[in-house]
Length: 132
Image (cartoon, rainbow, N blue to C red):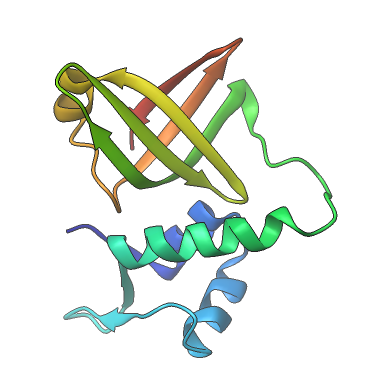
């Protein structure tokens, strides 16, 4: 399972590293230390926490929209539902929950699973997902 540094988690959650560190210090998200002493967050834990943060942000007043150049939304995969041919992938990108329908083959080729970092790219009504 992939793990994320505090800085990587902050970027995926759309907050500053200081905010992510305070959340970890307060026990809102579980961390562990690697052999170099860096604090890491397990991908599955970060995925669950990002959903919690996203749901909390939905009730707040909207400020600046969370977008980036070329309509790219970096985030973390929070759910994957596989069918025989098609698949549904959910990404939490800061306060945004993005759902994309794609082929099962694409999901398997990209190695998409809960806790993996990915980027949703939006053009018109199509959402494309890149593995980060």
